[in-house]
Image (tube, rainbow, N blue to C red; front, side, top):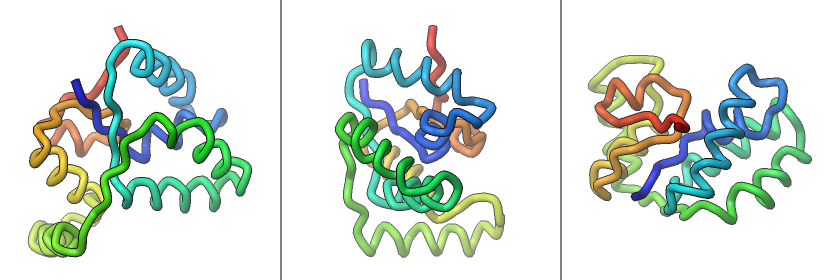
Length: 134
């Protein structure tokens, strides 16, 4: 089974000060041991690096690069998919639902991925299952 990994899970797993850190680490370990294929996309990769660098510094970026990225299949996002996401954001009009989220949902649907490792409620609202450890 394939599981999509969101920025919210990446950040919580790296930032020991995040209130969801322990839960994120537990889920990371479980996913790596039990669930198999983890994927994300290039915009989540960039968003994660930007967030980690801004809030925690370059050491956090290095931890992401060295300990998380090797476990992820990163799908490159093309211009057409980005533009569709921008249009969807403009049409929907919700400030809280980002282009990155829209790209994630679109990619997950195209690939038939139903499960997301995320702490972002928008994934559940969009009809995806949020991964919880047993």
